Image (tube, rainbow, N blue to C red; front, side, top):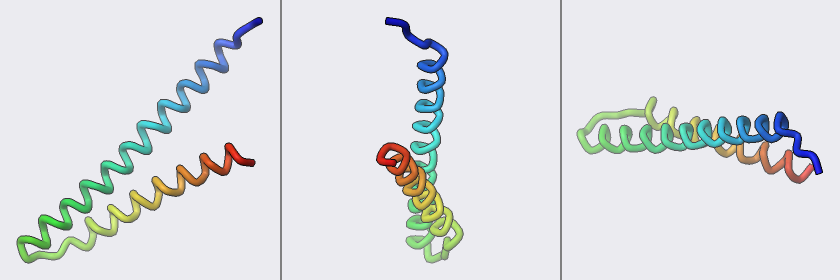
Length: 73
């Protein structure tokens, strides 16, 4: 039995990068929603924060959908 260490390292690197990117996108979405909430409570409007949050959530969902597509196909 021979282990291809280069392939294992490559899979680890891609998995780690994808995880960090997805968590970052989700956190940016949560921060955008909290900024919108804070602005709404103060009587202002933060439609840019809400739009950025929805965009971050959409990118996160697209990345997860693409990952599922790669696994199933």
